[in-house]
Amino acid sequence: MNAYFEPQRQEYIFPIDSQAFKTCHASNICKMQNNELAAAWFAGEKEGSDDIAIWYARTEQGEWLTPQKVAHDKQEPHWNPVLYQKSDGEVLLFYKVGRKISEWYTNLRKSSDFGQSFSNSEELVRGDRGGRGPVRCKVITLSDGSMLAGTSVETGIWTAYADRSTDGGKTWYKSNSIQIPVEYHGECTAMGSGIKVSEQSFYGRGVIQPTLWETTGKVHMLLRSTEGKIYRADSEDYGMTWGAAYATELPNNNSGIDVVRCDDGLLVLCMNPIGVNWGARTPIILMISTDDGATWEKEMILEEIPGEYSYPAIIAAGDQLYVTYTYDRKTIKFWQLKRKENK
Image 1 (cartoon, rainbow, N blue to C red):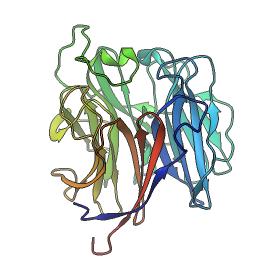
Image 2: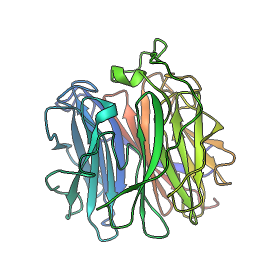
Image 3: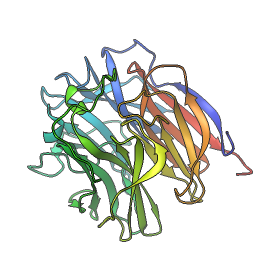
Image 4: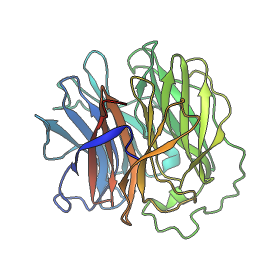
């Protein structure tokens, strides 16, 4: 292990029990063009409660500043923020709003000052219910200049899509649906799990929350699933249409994953290596692939003491790798890693 990366820094974005909220989850991270970092997550009394809002922190000269509440548009739970910086420097903050996951919608705020302040909210796709745009993982910029987001809908048979924008996020075009051949009869799939999620999350079956990478026009996604394994789907046309999803050999506990492609094509995946539906969210590890995701090797264990370490976000910039994830619902953990010179 540790063949490709060496840790440079690991820390909590904010100290445990230092904030007004009791629980936090679902972080996302972005490196700005000014070389500072920004992270966002949702937080409040408990997942799914009406006080759950979007919180945000950024670095100044490399040090994390005090978190700020940046979005609570109405007295309903907010979910799954995603940060993205456009080539012109504008920062976009996407997030979900709604009491029912199956009926939530995506709001958007913008920043023109590297995330120091954000605009008022607007709906990403007016009238949408189900959640267009990014559902949890980062938006990627494709080689043709378009933006691509992995999205999904949780209604009985969980279904994934890709949402594509060619005008900087003003309009979005949804791909064909991506499903797996499962049956669902309205039953709870939790199997006595103690995971602290909204109760409605325990109902449904299929694949959700795609994480994306591109290999010269061909785009690929890995998907969270209820079936004990990570699934994959592939596109030959910049994410406009997709083939059928198929199981990989990577285990999945029906929790979030995230993958990033480094400049030389190396893939790095952050995940919980547990092949049980609603299984434990520990350990959390990094996996690497040198063959575009055909095979994977363990690179590093980030956490292995029992707890909840989940919903990772991972980005790469040059020889640096940045990771955030939920740390026991008490804080957001941050890692910075550097590529080894001989790798």
